[in-house]
Amino acid sequence: MELDPRKSRILTCVVESYIRTGEPMDKAGAYGIQGRGALFVAHLDGDYFNVMGLPLCPLCRMLRAFGVPILDVQEAQA
Image (cartoon, rainbow, N blue to C red; front, side, top):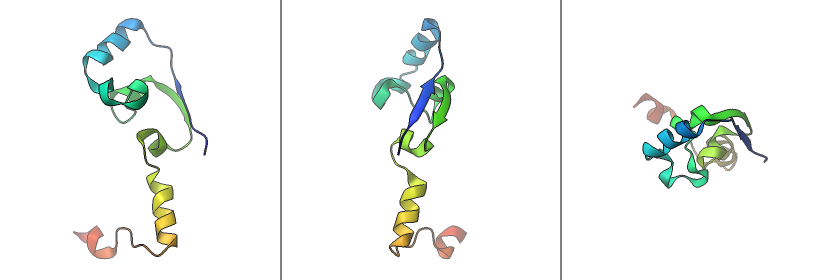
């Protein structure tokens, strides 16, 4: 699977403001696409969840293919 999160051109003062939030300090790549860092991503080719760290949709499909129940009716109604 190929992934290409293209970041937009951003001003230094905007980057410095983002750094001051503390959000990028524990992120691989120094931005969190699930938070304020999403404002810097101009285009994404690939799975959003790969950027976040785990491709949930493909994982669930694979687990279901092996008979692993994912979110059964009782869980969905809880």
